Image 1: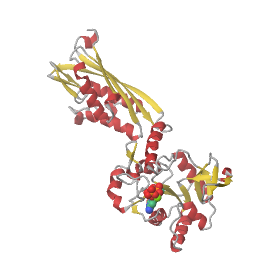
Image 2: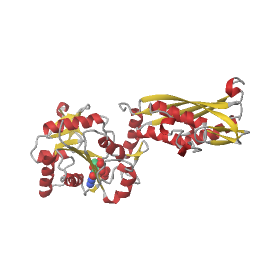
Image 3: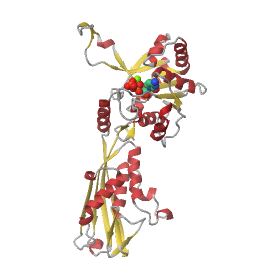
Image 4: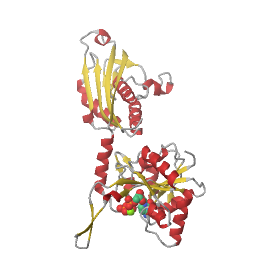
Length: 393
Ligand code: CTP
Ligand code: MG
């Protein structure tokens, strides 16, 4: 497939039906403002070269916070009073680049998949104007003013239409300019505008999961949908050992525990956190603590291990995953760990950004056997359970 593809994400609406403190596209779903995964779906797609957001001028600050760190995003342009005006603003902003194809998408549909973008591009290239549609499963009736049925509509002819809608760029820019010149400003989707301009609009297979978030209840449903999509459950294990040396405390699970000895090793030698980091990286199949924080690098000497755990957790979130559970076992004769168990759980949960119920801390001696039994060193073993989106990598 050749030709340049741009995407417009319209996000200038006020989200009046959803209500809330901020316009809905900036409200969180699964810990992220809704607009962020929407934009990311296009930014991550290999065939989409330009992503053009259209925002409300009064949301500039919300937009900056919501998109921090996203790369390859074009500077946002201000939208208009209607969705149609906002799309036109995006098209005019892209006119200088003159892409071959443009995908027009609502910020309020954050669940679009890469496969749907694939289908939109293919259908747009072959038809010039193409929209995703899903079949209607329910029986549909037309009623009169007294709610009396006047007709049962043949549902096999009906499609519920979504975005992204794909158009040859010149075709849709021209249609928008003509509609604006004719004083028409209330087309609710771009297909309707293309139909008005006399173009044939083709329908390709949409995606039932690509729902639009419109009302406050939709946020609850979206949250559930996101969680249900995290079906790729993975576990990883981690193991770490550090030797006792002279000193007056050990760091364990991010907690300073006074002791007659200290420990030596990488950074602050917190075996519990190091084992947890490796468990999480293991679940991601993403190297180990030494890959990301080489012990030979002087900047990690004496470093607090909190940042290693925070880093590993961020790697999970960057893949839109969650940490379902962390569990660690410490093996040593002394110090006694159980008096510090709850402090360790609380600290680990805070660093990982999860609730304390999702953190297990256990301790055992090795019955005076082996190097832990002789008090030469301390061991930690950990298991991490994470959930990633199904169909990810
Ligand atoms: N949109 C826009 N400019 C407008 C109106 C809407 O860019 N003047 C965008 C919205 O931000 C949204 C998409 O068009 O991403 C679909 O619109 P809708 O779901 O109706 O969102 P809102 O208009 O914000 O919501 P409401 O109608 O409830 O106020
Ligand atoms: Mg609206």
